[in-house]
Length: 207
Image 1: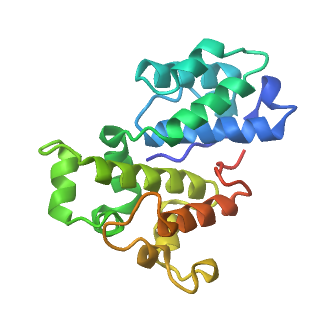
Image 2 (image 1 turned 120 degrees about the vertical axis):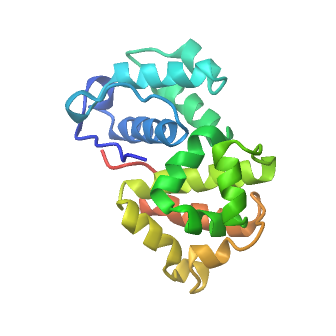
Image 3 (image 1 turned 90 degrees about the vertical axis):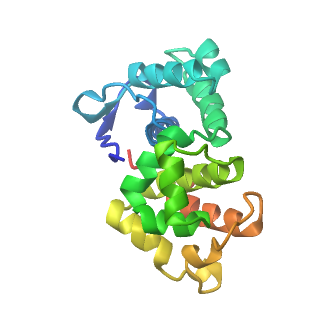
């Protein structure tokens, strides 16, 4: 997964930093889910790029309402709807290659509570990804997006292995042990910790 390089913002995002951060988060999520995020010319986050990303998501059945209500002058509502859609829409076909590239097969398999051989079968499409595994993969994708504003791929991998005071001295890798429940406290605590790093629960790349 290539980390989005956003150096500046334009249009309505320039006067509303919070809106710019949310739009950047949306682009990062779309990228890790395997969707086109448009052409970031000179690293500028523009309404056109965000609109193109929303259209790509809507074409795949994610955040269709966002594409309908998108307003170039006031894109905030559409971005919020698209973020909600990406929050609950696992896309294993796109997320497998992105997370394998960022985390590596061994670490990703441990985080998912599956064997490396199963990971390869799911990632290559030899076997369909079970719903429970797809859901865990998606949560890890959201966590990686939350971390991407502060760390490179090496730093993200280390983040999962380092003990954290907020996790009672355990590492995220230890907390996410076995076939963890997507709605359980372990998953919630790791997601919350990653989100707090960027100042928001949802997280955001640096803008």
